[in-house]
Image (cartoon, rainbow, N blue to C red):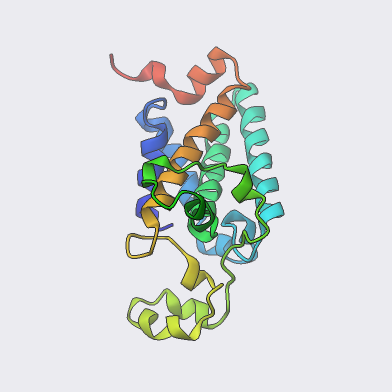
Length: 209
């Protein structure tokens, strides 16, 4: 998703539990995943090109790294690892057809009702993510060329499939799913930490009463 929405989703999911300063560290790491160097040969950061196994593995690695860092008392590193994780799980819903599969099963459901981890959708043989068809795909990111490029890209391209902003179909379903998933990932991480580690990681003790 675009930077604005990564920021909004992360804040919506985590601001109840993290101090403003701690949350900014998480957001900075989240946004860092979209740096130019991370756009090349890092499909699994964004679930592009059907990089599902690598993406799932990356999420698990970031989660364990965050736990290890928090248990070692390195909270900036723990927040950075968790921030990188949040970007990848958020992109899952924007760059795959998970939302479409879920909506097939719940055609009348509102965005707020979406389940981000419905097993039947996660294991559906039709689940796929957008492919990057270079060099045309690059031109999609040039605003005044976008309308010209889209008809020349196949239906399974990133350009055709993405739900990165409000102009895209089902954007709100993808956004809400990403918020729910970000929240669930925090709760999962917190289960592996002591109360003292959680307080230090979230930095809530430094918040004014």
